[in-house]
Image 1: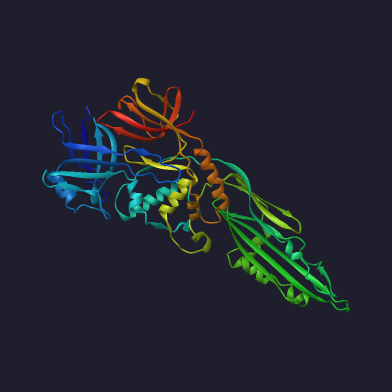
Image 2: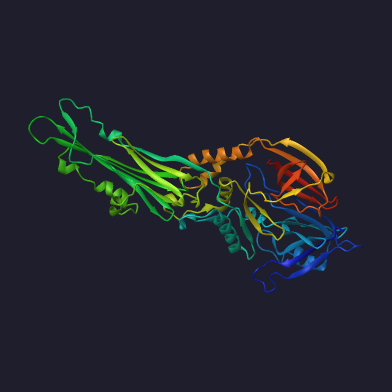
Length: 485
């Protein structure tokens, strides 16, 4: 019958009437309370945009006393033009939209007493509060789901509003083996060019460096320390002179494979062995950064953490290499520079959210109940909905235009993200490469229960829906979809 109902309910969570319907606009068979109504499409979005546009519903109605007193008056608003009252929209008694009212876009035609109200799903809150920041390094790391949930929590700390969310996300898997860092120490054995002097490596010093890992929660350290003493014998019968060279490295590994290297290098002048053979400066390099001296004797060559293997190997007198093998998609993220500089520096939550969605090729959208859904872009439904040929009003097949992902957004993560960016760029390009897509119009809304990521079969080909709009007047779906078989 295409009859609409819009319920205005109390959305301010600290009010005693929270959740109660306070006013309704109800279409009748012979009289329409809702003069016009339009709703934008659901979208998964493209490669380069990882925060989906909020779904928008716009409707017109005659001004009522309740709308004048509670919506137009400006007396019942959160900050930033968000009404205390939220809406639920129904078509033929079926809920299809839940959202907030943007009071900054209210308009009233005085001559007709018609008011236009613009509503958004609660993804709009993310852009309204895009300036929120967080001190991420106050915890060892955040799971992808926590990135979204914490963002929503910080919004609730600003205004008393419900922000329901659900996860349909699974950590992607892409196994790889790579080098996290290489520490070259061959130059420590280079003998200076001194005439009439016999130069040798002092036999009583270390011949091999100490190196290895320390694992604590999500904090991964790879450490290296070495000492080389060079003896200069002048052939005069005395003990000669000595020079001591010290090298220390602390490699902190963030986000699975993103290193930050801290360096210590020291070289003494020529003096007696007793005067130069002193490691206090090297030891202080570690202890000043919270690494106890005893830890340096407890380093391990490698281990497996969160299903990922960290290992190390040495080419004697040349270099030490720290390696990684396993899933390059980190289980925990460590955004912001505060992890590195040990400060309470805050990082923009929107930047972190965008980086998380890009990293995992994930997306956000809302369902009819207003829940924000976190999902993998490639997580299509299991069931295939067959579309009858007679219900396909129009059908256009075309090649999807290729976009180059802006993986520099991953720079917000702690550590050197160069390798991670290269891998993710390749994964995203591969995901979108050579895709065919369709623009289709499908008749009969009630006949087909379509949603984002639904799989549909048209003319023996299967497609996954990436954009979906309902035209209620024409009783049609407007569909964009990727071909997946």
